[in-house]
Length: 368
Image (tube, rainbow, N blue to C red; front, side):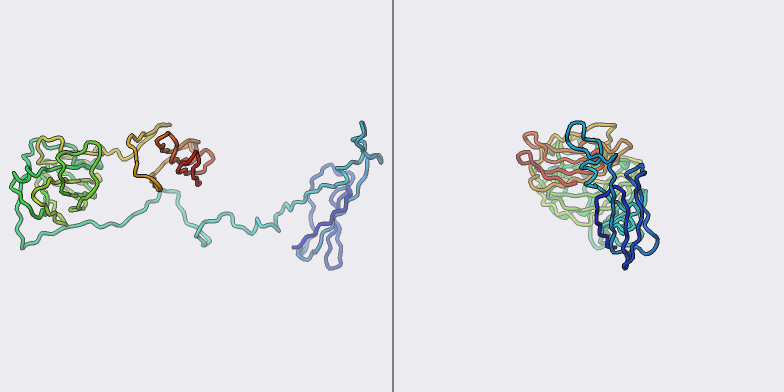
């Protein structure tokens, strides 16, 4: 609908609607009107037939007086704000506006009329492959007993926790047990009770010249995966058959890396280990998989991360309470001079999520 407004400066307003040589007038204000804001109803019919709207005003000066800038003459009659006829026109029905043509919500990459959603938590599942090895009936296997089990370590087979630990077996101990260079095809564990629910039990091995384990950090490099399977252990000898045999050279120490996610309620000991504390490193054996903050708190990382230079990814779940949103940092990381290098507000007090990264001369990159 094309509407052209012609303003003639008068005080009493009326609308003249022009349609195919016809003119319809609508009164808006009179001299007795007590408001400067009113709703003007257009005549019924097809509004698209109207081609032009003319606005007509007539102006009455109080007692025929004209206001001037002179002292005492500013408000005696008509003045400049009267004859300029400042008028705002708003289509309160919005019938002809874009508002009625736009959807109430726009969902990226979704064009269907109904968007399914749930108020319950959803989860993503990733497919993975575990290994179930079978023995070759035509092959012979020899068993070797490593250690006498006099100082078996408690807490490493704990189905109530998620555990990650490493054990170092010196080559002298292996040789004393009668082992020589060759393929290792499995591991036997004698547990005292049934231990059910060692999900994703992962055993990795590698050859190493190290004689002690670093007590501050787990070794991560160069391992070969030999066993990966959800596993239940009975109170007897349990054979964990490797899906990939480990080729020991006969002269190096063996570092074994063991991890699992506990899904049960029983525990036992890691058997067959002698009293050599330097040869076992345990991490996360208490099942502390999350950090719970009551109101306010923080976790300080005391080790620098010099390997981070141009890119960083931070992944976490955050469950907020009724106090959110709060104007605070969810986490931040500082550079060597105390400058903030990474920062996240999840969310800030205005309900927006901010991610800041990098810092050069006090300037950083931000997305939200």
